[in-house]
Length: 439
Image 1 (tube, rainbow, N blue to C red):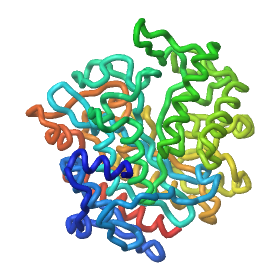
Image 2: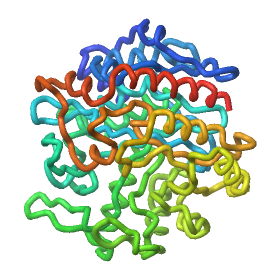
Image 3: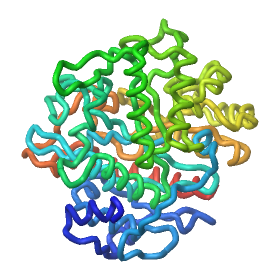
Image 4: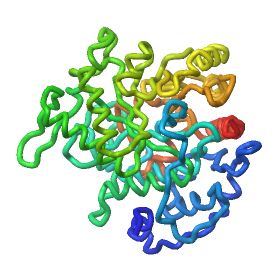
């Protein structure tokens, strides 16, 4: 039994799927040749997150681009094929799966199920380039994993544990379903939706702990070959569940580059060490089409290309269309690495107007002469689903508050995001995607 059906049977008692008329009614379509591509827009996340997993899978099947309805989720799902260098041109959309997890009282969990539930509202990939979902958290965070805390208390995703399985914020606590099976189900459903997938990981050594069953956690050290090997093994294990991208936090500063602007804590890998690590992940997973994205690794292009990265973030002034188009034309012959443009990033503290976000989104999707020369782009959950006004992307990376007024997860989902204006913004973003998918 495949992982999706095993998940359905565990939670629903049945693997039988049904046509979801609500999804059909609320679906937007791509323009022109992309007419068969569908996703739910003009929506609020709470409308999706409050549904059962079964309804979410029904929705994913109903929105099938091939217009074939499967009564049972199929066994063999292939990732969308955009060639080995797909990551050089992709749009990366980071979803904070911890923030949308199920919060009941002070407990947080099942973020992977919430990530599945949000998939119908993520536009599928275009003709010429892929959309890739990046999950913010996979591994346990160092303090308070599995719990939410008041908004003014730190509970950072930027500190993680290795050799401790996966975060209780994310995994469904069920002895019959391993973490790997749950990630495999997520990846199969995302691939069925026409999406690529990846995850964020930190590489600053004082932000990583190595867990041991019978002694205290120890701080990760890059000079320790056992720690280096563990890092590689953990990444390969996840790649083997279907993830195809790794987003490396603080990758710009690997090898001591530009460290006067480094804000992480602890040493980073040496340059040749990172080359080795990336090569090992590719070789051991036997996967030739992985995308390795480096945060801010976008100044010395050749340095990062030779390191083995596919894309780097935060290079271009995205508010100006002509600037984006200029760099797209200038870098069009760089087919295996390119710096990209950001609508926003994980350090975004809010304050940008809806119109400014939509302008940046348009420039990402249309700032080129030919679609085949498009630059990679990066955005956050908030660029599709605006957050409530008193929080922001970075705050939710650094803390894990529940916004529930009655202790229920439904109330948290409803209050985490803006209401009517957020719905209209999502509609406007959906219109931009509709035209972009024809590229």
